[in-house]
Image (cartoon, rainbow, N blue to C red; front, side, top):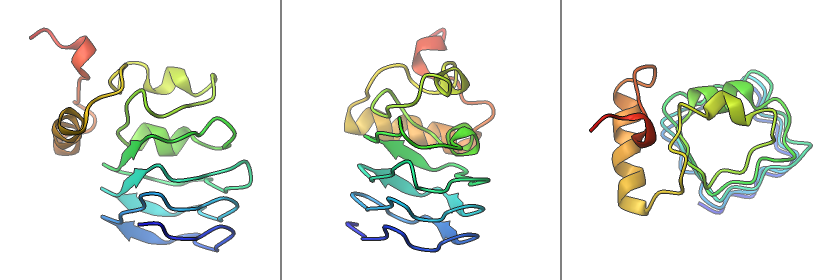
Length: 131
């Protein structure tokens, strides 16, 4: 929590179950990093953050502004998020039918994230379920 990693060289790092809440990752080199079931909440990224080939399998993205960040494809398609994550317009279609389309409350977010982690490819967000 609150890690100051701006400009850090973390290429190829394996960050399994890392908690990166309120972390500063502006300008960090994360290309090829692997986040597995990490919690990335209110973390600061910027246009200089390098996310080329990042995988975030089963990770939780919440309350992030990623509108200026490049190379988001692999990050957002392997992670779980909701409408609290601000994305560039060209990335939004990648999560349209994969993430909840509203900002979830804390408990609902945790429940949905747990469902997602069980089988990310089979996960169906609440707005598309026939309950």
